[in-house]
Amino acid sequence: MDAKALLAKYAQGERDFTGIALGECQLIGAELPDIILRGATLNVANFSSANLSRADLSQALLNVSRLTGVNLTEANLSGCKLNVANLIRARLVDANLATASMIRAEMLRANLTNAHAVAIDLSEADLREAQCRQGNFNIANLSRTDLRGSSWLGASLEQATLNNANGDRVNFQGANLSGAELRHGVLTQANLSGAILRDANLRWANLSGANLRNADLTNVKLSGAKLVGTCFEGANLTDTLLVHADLQNANLMHTTWVNSDASGAKLSGIKLYGALRYNLTLQDADCQWIDLSPNGDQHRVHQFPHARAMARFFSRARSQIKLVVGAPLTPTGLKAFSAAICVTADRHLSLAPVPSIETVSRQTILTYTVAHDGLLLALAYAALMPFHQGREARQLLLNLAAPMKDLLTTAAEGSTMRQIIPPMVRALANTHKQLAPLDQASALQRDDSFLLAPLRLTVINSSNQHLSLFQSATMGSEDPDADTLEDPILISTAELLPPISALLAFAQGCHRP
Image (tube, rainbow, N blue to C red; front, side, top):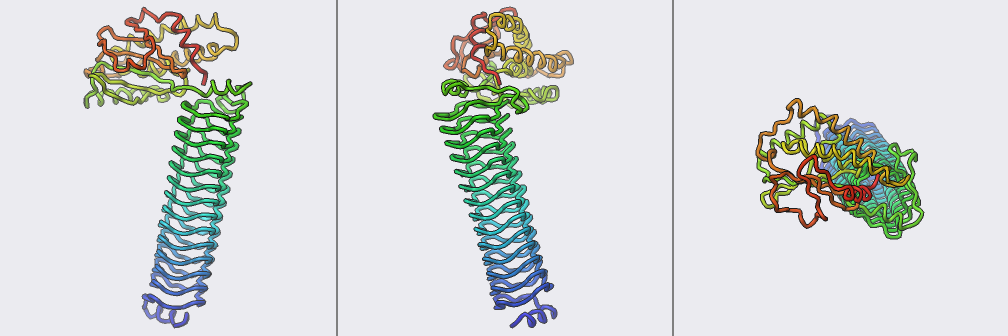
């Protein structure tokens, strides 16, 4: 059968041409929707501008075929061989490309929106400016593929292989690249904002100037990667491997950068304002200066004259508040506690604390982690809001403002205390202004036994120094967290403040954001 005979039979209503052999056939511009060419041999065929929507081409052979501008919307190409095929501007919207082989295919400006392409082989293909939005490319092979200017917005590429791919200016916004292999990939100026890259391998990749804002980079391997000027703002860098990575002038503002190994990394000029950082390994890292200005405009630069100064700056613990409640958390208590948090959030969203919760020895330990020491007292105030006995503790926090200001009179010009105490006191005063009306308006219902229980409040700065500030008179003597407290100062009333020596030691151990 030749192309002319196929068209004639199709015109008569026949649709099933399973297994047909039509190598080198010319079907330019043919209207063949819903045709069945399953297992057909169509190598070197020309289907340019043809309409093959909803066609069944599963297991068909279309190697070196010309399909420029073809309409393959909702077509089934699973297992199809399209190696070295020309699919420039092809329409493959909602197409099934699972396990298809498209090695070295030309797919410039092709549209694969919402395509199902699990385990597809697109190695060395040309996908420049292609639209692959919302597609499923899990376990796909995109090694050495040209992805420049293409869009994979919201696509799924879990366990995909993109080693040595060229993704300059590629759009992976919101894409799922969990467990993907991107070794030696080029992702310069790429948009990966909100992308999920958990457990991905980007060793020796080039992401200079890329946008990874709010991306999940948990346990990502970035050893040897080029990250000059890369934006990680708001990203999760927990357990990220950055050995010998070049992060010069990268934006790490408001990131969660913890348990990360950046040994031998280049860190000069990184923007770190608001970053939550601790448990970092920075052996042999090179960092001459960092930018701590809120806008990342180098208005506030911190210099490191030697490696020891850098090590001291980065070797910080988590800034935390530990609130021990003298009662186990019951389902009704959790409901009342959650409702109180929601009311607090409505009033002061930026300090609506959500803790980790642990129940030990008939007591409940609420642990709050804060971005930096300057917010410790403010977050402690907000954390106490749901509790009846928190009123006295909050008053104690407010009473701390005066002695802390007094510490400034003895502090040397330019010292850490002069930099940390004023913003700490201002943040506390602002939080009080925002949240105090909740007490007056009786907006918080504290009638549950959990919210009426006695309390113990401890603040922990980034030098891992513990300062116990408050303990209700009726609080039990047993301390479920006793092993972590260092010389606790137990305060039972708002009139009795901690010794000035304890406040001084604690303030000296705080770090500015």
